[in-house]
Length: 438
Image (tube, rainbow, N blue to C red):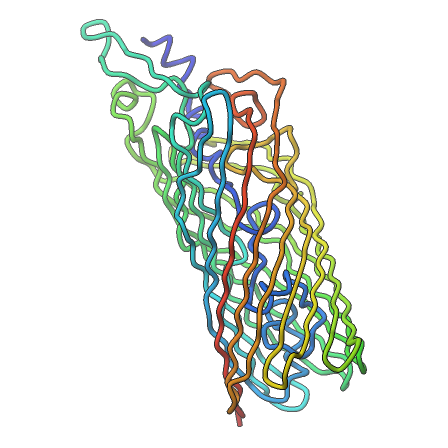
């Protein structure tokens, strides 16, 4: 019994099983990013960083609010319907996550005077939700029956701890201040105040629940003259300190001393920096085209490290080895009528994840994003915007030559070999109102 305990259930093994679930499949962009920040952004596949006209462009480039003649406020919601599946030696398995996830979309712009404007945005630029059933991966399925007293405590334990549920809800509050250097050029400076509203990271034997905060900054600029405009937006990387409770779900492992019943734990979650560049041109008074390039600094997400409350011991430390990734975006708007604008978009997003540390909790791959939507003026400063996006992941046929060994992290091993497929539907709806602040 004790040989089993020592060889298979070290603190690193147990912690790794749950905290490998820290990352899961995102719905719409590389890694676990969710770049859809407005209904107009959903419709144009997030190609809005160089747009000085639309209210929905402000979350992508806060400097844009300097080009607006009035103050305004916009509120809405993003709905995400993800679908993930894997086909392996035991058949086809679907991720049993929530059918639809909701995220806030809020933005306000206050025109202080001809030069200064202030803004506040609330969005969810990062998040995840994945749930795999315990029988999904055959090499990780099974249990051992321990000897009955007096030779042992009896009971059974799983042969390999398996990550089950991963849920991460991150809200970003972005207060900004914009200054119009001239009629053609504006700059903006702001903060990214991240709040991990909820973090649930479970395995078949343990669970970790917590929350936390982090801080970053953003810089942006926008130039617009005649039919041409160009924009840049940068968000710094940030480290979020997640404090939570790490609990055992298997009483037998607690009985033999392999797990503590409960203890506090800390996790530092590194969010990537983001750089967006874009140019926009009005081909006619009704038709405009924008091309954007985005670089996500996922290399800053280099490791996962978890510290327990017992003498500050490191429970788990793992290397992600992600790389920086690009996204290429195209947005088109057409003014159908004075009150109605049609929008279309396409984006190709690269994955930051290679095969060396591939994770079933992050069955990530390059993806195609297709957007369509409409904006309609209701009069008296009121406007409604709606957008729909379909995200198609490239199928990933993962085959590893690295054999899985019990007690070692499953990422990058043959335990999770399979054909992974994923797609997502996104729907955004916003209502906004312009007004004179003073």
